Length: 168
Image 1 (spheres, rainbow, N blue to C red):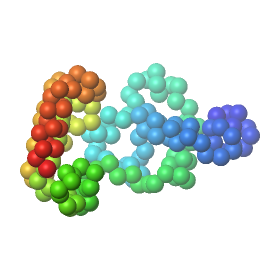
Image 2 (image 1 turned 45 degrees about the vertical axis):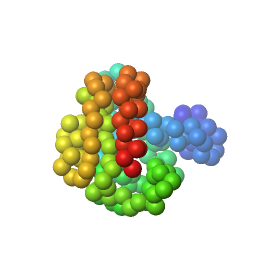
Image 3 (image 1 turned 180 degrees about the vertical axis):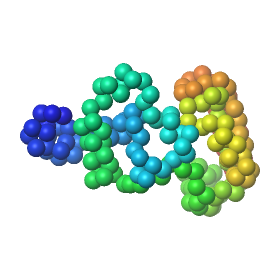
Image 4 (image 1 turned 60 degrees about the vertical axis):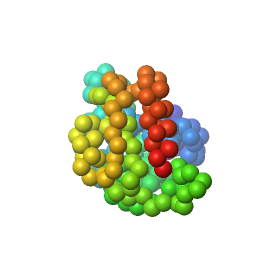
């Protein structure tokens, strides 16, 4: 980074945007998420993305965080939207051939939420919100896990997805 700055380059490699710049900007969210005005999210979720390890904090150069901000401000869409919102969109990729495209909203009748305990991103509070606010939602707890749940319980996930898809 310092060599690039010495060359008056704003990028990690060369003098134009590369995949490395974008990869770094998105990966940096695992160390320090963008501020709430640029990346609104449920506050409890923000804590998941904050690096609390003092060893990590010591090695993160502020220039790298500034580079992340530059890439987001100049090349990526802000503000990001990570909140659950009631919005309608059309889904065609998950419909059976005999169905017309369906409008999906908060009351879509075929919703499935697979969760695990404790989970990395979907907290018990979020599950409760979904159950209260999304009609006809089937919630399936697929077991104790944090991150690689699909590797630990693939058969239950496959069974639940197959049943859900058959109900469409």
